[in-house]
Image 1 (cartoon, rainbow, N blue to C red):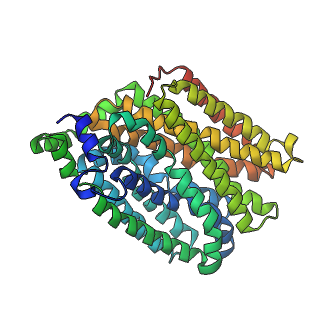
Image 2 (cartoon, rainbow, N blue to C red; image 1 turned 90 degrees about the vertical axis):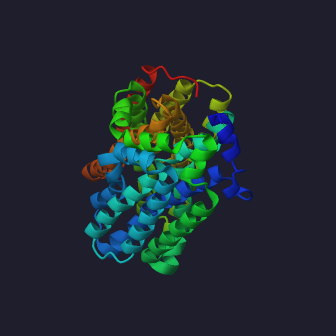
Image 3 (cartoon, rainbow, N blue to C red; image 1 turned 180 degrees about the vertical axis):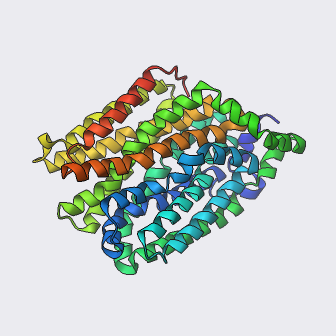
Length: 417
């Protein structure tokens, strides 16, 4: 059976998923639940600063520490996911997230939260790195760009949900209650995924892959790593992603704190940030549809980076200090048009992978470079803000990241995804 036929059969019609939510959507939802853990810190920063004495720079590291695992070993985690099994990796990752979040509810020192955030980062990667490859196996190729566009929304959707609801939940049950609730969410989605998504063995059987061939593929870890890191495509996509993710997390992650300093309540600040975060979904979905229609991926990257540079200037420059509505709308556009970038890069990662056995490894390398950017971006923005006494120079840092992204885009021969 060809991969096209196997994908069509697996896209919601496999025996283990004969009815209900198609498997491809279940794994996308699993990614959104993982993103809840990433997004829980921004609305909790003001609470944690009061409860645990977290400094502004420590808050920056709380935002970025979840990226530690990805920064140090994203490509190896992706490599392991390719060999260990895609579905198994997602299940294991949700288990790690549930355990670390539950343990975090008992933390009493900032250092304890930092360590647990690093562990959550490992769980997050185990969940999200295999998903593009899983989607590739679960849907027909003609629908791949559309589904990867939806997958590109996982971070914005999960983060916006917790940004919107987190302050209200913490008002009722405290930040510890929010941590415990998200642990339960990970456990629940893991159980759902175990029931609804075909096992790795079932997918290989449907695709006609001999067991011996699958074992041999898992054994070629070194060859897959060399193939991935020896190809220019994965490098260019990965570094480009880091230029996007570093500035997006820095801007969105600190919005609740910026608005709180401006005198807004935690609930209002959370809702405003959630809307800005959710706007990112529109860009991701639009990118998926435009790629599906044959729009050049390079042009989508140009639009995304140019918009991010222009909107952060409006949002943070002192020239717009007396125009709060314009500054907020600029942040919304920053997130919305910038959303063209991740969906485009996820689609490109699938295409620039050296072969079918290196998709998760390629995505892992992309995530590793992205994580390095996200690890360094928020603390750098926080350090500059603390040094100059405000956020007015944030646009310079984000503008430099956009400039690098534009240069990488212009020098890469991006194929239509």
